Image (cartoon, rainbow, N blue to C red):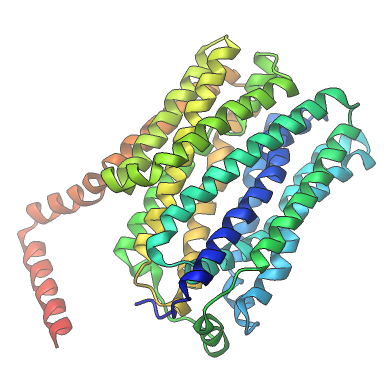
Length: 437
């Protein structure tokens, strides 16, 4: 069970506000990288495979850095101190792209790859610690509402940032316009960092940190946890299979410019912010897994629409649907993770978070490479979009029928071999008797 002592209601409310304000500032800066980074890369000559590496390669370094996250956190008595340096390092992802014009043009795509890979190393540490701290700072019953509120404000401020940055990019000369944008985004990210550092943790969080050297938790042996991870892995592979190709399709095939990409981002963000107002209630009514399945399926419908249409207005509608669906799915995924780890002790939470992040980041590394490698091999971008959309649709159906996919084969094996059923029954009875003892 979770042994973290509770904070006072006033302290919990302050923490809640700090987490929301933090993501609001971060959202403004996020507009620079999430909405315009790929367009900038295209402008400096990045190929489809280089765009794929920019999307997927950071996840491999995230995976590698999380392997030492438990060791890093245990070096500090105070979790906040363990979070400080990785958080600062992660925010370099907004600063490094501003240095791109300093390099010769042929090296600029490589620098952009480096500028997203290097911050991924501290990000792997900070993200693991961040989730563990937030779990200690906010009670379980407020985690999903907090996720919804954070997603809401992140989308609102990202929309504001996209609108401002889009206007700026259209008016100012290239490449100075992008340099100024990334520098401003870095400032916003630093302000968000300060807000996180104002969060207060329970006394037992520091006490546990100073006494536990190595966790003996075994997340891979937890069926509930691994089922939750499998759902999230399938969702990420399906969704990200075409993510890096969409901007390339819009720019190359449909003639989209920075102004349209800003409007596209606004449409996506407005829909995302709107769905955040209702996601918590939707999840309570239908359950996290069904929400994830339907959300991923609708992102597939949106991608298929963008692939087949030649109308940019239709693209805006599809982008809004995709943004709303993925945000609802992301909130549900976080809720699924929280539910799967609600009984995990505080000292073991870093291990569970590490395993969760590692498996999800493997999926996030694999997903973008599907579309980018197809495009780099000369496959028509429209066909790549259709294939990616099909992967999203299949992923949604798989998640919706996950129980049948996991357990029906096992039942068939037991029915085919009655002796296995007897062994399984005896094993279950033995385990129950041991628990009773």
